[in-house]
Each structure stands twice: as C-alpha cells, then as structure tokens.
Image (cartoon, each protein chain N blue to C red):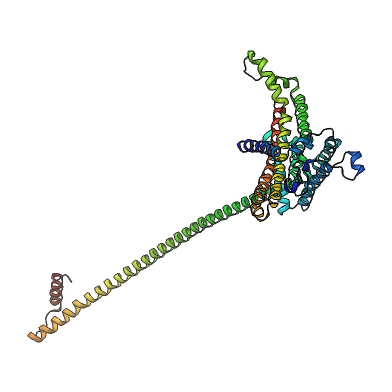
Length: 199
Length: 249
C-alpha cells in the first residue's frame, strides 16, 4: 500500500504543479476552466450514458463468453495435469509392486535353491558315509579273511617247519654220529625247542 | 507562448461530436469512441489469445491467462470465497480502466479516464453495488458499522458522522484519484511539449536546450505507463476491499 499512497500523493502533487504551471504559463486556458467540469456540455454527460452502455456490453461479453472460455481452458489443463499425475502415480505403484514381487521371487528362489542344495549335500553326505561304511565293512571282512589265510599259512608253515626241523636234525645227527636217532626223541626235542622259542 | 500562438494544455480534454450532426444528436463524442476501441482491444486480446485453447499455451494465450488469474486471485484473495461471483465485474472494471489509460497514451488519442464524469460514474456504480450487496447480505446490521465496536457511547455523536462521511466520500476519492492522475499526466506531457515549441523559437540554442523537455517527456511516458496500470489496480483493489466489507457477516 505504501507504493500506492506514494503514487497517489505524487499524482496529486503533479496535478497541483500542473495547475500552477498552467496558471503561470497560460492564464487564458485556466480562465476558460477544465472541459471536464463543463457539465452544461451535453457531450460531457453523454459520456456517462454511452459509458454505461459500453461498460454493460463489455461486462456481458466478458462474463458470458470470454471469461468462462478462459476458465474452461484453465480447468481442462488442471484436470489433465491431475489426471496425468494420477496415471504416473498408479504406474509408479505398479512398478513398485513389480519390483517387490521380483524381489520376493528372487528371495523365494534363493531360499528354494539353498534348501535344494542343502538336501543334495545331505544326500551326498549320507551316500558317501554309507559308501564309506560299506567299503570299511568290506575292507574289514577282507582284512579278516586275509588274516585268517595268513594264520592258516603260518600254521601250515609252522607245522611244516617242525617236520623240516626234525628231518634236518635226524640228518645232522646221522651225519655227525653215523647213528640214526630215534625219530620220536627227535620229534619231542624239536617240539620242546620250538615251544621254548614259542614258535 | 511560442510565436504568440497560445497553447492550451486543457484543449486535449475537450469533447467533439463524431459523425457530425448524428454524433451531436446522440451526444456521441470521441470519448465513447475510445471506450469502444478500448473494449474491442481487450476483447480481441482475449479472443485471439484464447482461440488456440492449448494445454501448453503460447505467448498470447499465456498473457491472457495471466490477466485472468491475476484478477481472479485478487478478487478471491481480497473478497473471500464470495469473490468469485464479483470476479467478472472486477475484471471488466480493471481492464476498462487499464485499456482507457493506455489508449490515452498514444499520440493524438483521447483518454476517457481523464473525465471526472466517467470516473465518478464508475466509482458511483461501485458505491451503489457495495451498498446493495451490504443491505442484501447484512440487512439492517449494515448500519451498525457506522458505530465502531468497543467505542465509548459518549463518542457516538462524533464518531457516527465521521464514519458516515468517510463512507460517503469513498466514490469521491475513488473517482478523483483516477481522474486527477490521468489529467496530471497528460497536462505534464502537454506542458513539456509546449516548452519544446517555445524553445524552438530561440534558434539554435533553443534547439539544443529543447532536448531537455523531450527527455523529460520520454521519462514521463515511462511513469505514465506505471501510473496507468497502478491506477487501474488501485481502483480494482479498492472495489474488492469495499466488497469484502459488504459480504462480511
């Protein structure tokens, strides 16, 4: 409002200056008075009548035709903008939903893959263990078998050893003494000697 | 004045009948002619501006829309929600005055807003409208406004006449403000222009010094462009303020 009052004041000041300048420079003009105040002139009052008619027509054209047209354009624009915004918002919601679904699917797939992997690993683990056990069992049975064979071979070898020892002793004694020793005595001595060496 | 021939600065405000005898009989001077020109200018601006009715406006359409929204915001912000009903009236008033002020700035043209009869008629129309709206909205409570709330009853004999006087002086101040501004501006133009002619009578020295008044007139034209829109704005905003008081419960 400060600017306005200042301008009004400036305008009034200008009028005063103008009128005083007028009084100095053109006394004749001042004496005749302002044409605006010559209300005896029918043209001055005629302005009011014509002005009223023109103003009224101006008002009618503006309020009935022009301004509703502008309002319609502005309204259409704001509606279109809100419509576009709604579309964009719903598109964004859809996109967000799709992203969430994708993430969920990925998470599910990952969990499933993990579970699957675990299951496969467990199975493999179990199978390997079983195989190991089988192998161990087979190896154990084979070892037992082999040990048994070894023991049998050993027993056989040992029994043959005594025979060989007795034959050798007999042959040695015969060679040394020229006497054939009693076979039973040799067998007994070999027996006791082998028992002494725990063969 | 220069060359002995008198330059009458008030001559520019004189009214002449147009179309000879017909104009004289119908009291049709150049003033209503310029009113019609102003109205046609505004309507053409709005018509050609809004004709594309584009979603993305061009320059002219954007200008027309700015005009619409400027007055619409002024009416609704100042008067309140009821302002939408008065918006076409405020728009008409503002652009009638603005176009009148600006058309008057063209050389050899006429400024109808420099006639007190025109400005007072418009101010009185606003005054009547506010009184009618006040009586319609507030009924007899309207008259209670002449006694300010909370004032001592002893002051009533003093306050009530002052309030009535200030209310009645509204159309006077409204009309004289516009009229005086327009007259002052155009008188100043004429005076400085007459100085140029006066100085031209003094030969070469005068020709050189005549640059001064011409420069002043150029500056005055800028000032008058500001005053023209400002006075239209003042007239419209004061009308809005009066109407706000009228529709206030």
